Image (tube, rainbow, N blue to C red; front, side):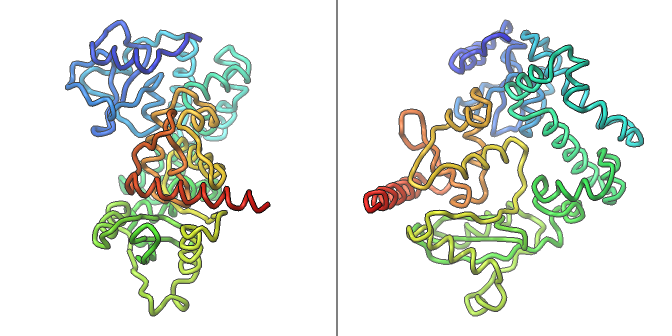
Length: 377
């Protein structure tokens, strides 16, 4: 496999609209949600808005759309192994988008051993190449592809039974096993854009300002920090536009809030330094890549930090540093998933949705408490 083009060289190629770099990578722009060839004649983006990917399928896995102007999928990939990964992705796509009645046959043909055999690679070689290029395994890619097809069918108005078979799920049990982690809600609720989904939320004072915590019966769906209650409510509404958002008043704290009240108290205790190990269930929508990043963040010990590159290496995708940063930035349950514990290579604090000062305060408080407990041990 060719050595990946360094980020600095990739950015120079984009700036120069270098045609010779086409096929070596694609770049995606966060503000537009579109990915392009290095030579794309479209308006040049700002550096902080750009994320690089080794192949178009990796960009699409992260939710970006192909540029209709430069058509990056048509560019010939230069690295033979990356081209093999792209072919495997296309085979998985075609199987899942094909005849639903052939699901059993497709399942057999989508095993790692079957895919590796047709790619003329060992299972280890294919798994390693796929993880390096895509950040996930072929099985995870297939699951995510089915779920994207399911979401599309549900949005188009299919009933759940029709949509699950169209997406290649052989039974409803297989779908519902995956639904909470992939959709953050049941398929029927997702079909209606979250309509009927109930999120109980409360806003209270915390050591870091006003704190909004929202949750379903499965787990926490939102944890926001700010100064304005109105801004926090607006953020929750934007995240869940058609859900029933139910504000729990203080007078109903013990009777009506159920787990929410307990979870809020644990979060507040954590922010006060009284509950270092915060292990709460979450109920959020996420891509396969986001889930891998967020799971890794929850492994960072209290009082410690990791760099974006360390997290990228830990999930088996060392070149995906900016994609890791994007997953941190889109984390809807801050503190529970401690994205504040990820810092830049030089130790400086990068952007934080709820403000750099809050990030600094969180890290300083955690570090002080961790050292204090270590000294007493």
